[in-house]
Image (cartoon, rainbow, N blue to C red; front, top):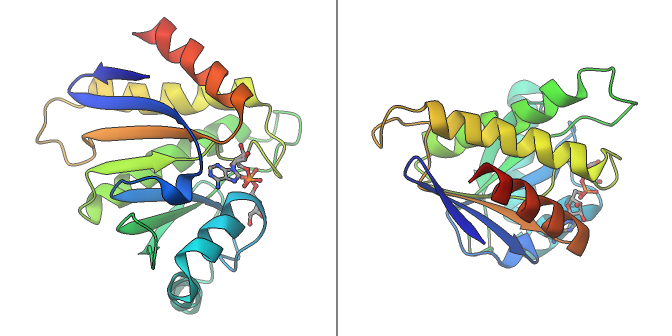
Length: 186
Ligand code: AR6
């Protein structure tokens, strides 16, 4: 499913993000940047050791990555050109700034990807696996953050506005939720 929002193609696709052909894929990392399970493990396995090597350099420089923030590395052997590692919030009931931090992951990732020259970016459903964020609430936060950004960017010259944003859903439930929400929005 695809919808044009103020000149940007917003796509909902089902699949494995490590195989998705785009400029930047986003990793749902942890603040150590040293890898883990879920999509993080899949990205490091498929991309190879070059990604972890750059994560170590970032750790040496700034000690890791805060929740809600994002950093960029090579994509190693992946079809994408870069990986944007962002750290989603652990869900603790919703009263711990989770929504604000999750939205920040999407916005900072787009900002970093565009700053690195990427025009197309693909997201997994950040925080909805090991970090336990309820899927529907996470999808609402993700889509509203991204669509608000796209709608308020003035024109195609705005450097925080990418040409394509894909939400790559690994499971059927997330895909259904995202499709319904995007249909309501367009
Ligand atoms: N492609 C796309 N989406 C995927 C893939 C894949 N190959 N594999 C899993 N997902 P999670 P989190 C989906 O747990 O909740 C790691 O250990 C998955 O179905 O990967 O942000 C990190 O190091 C779910 O919808 O990330 C952190 O410690 C979504 O990706 C922690 O997990 C996110 O699930 C981060 O937890």
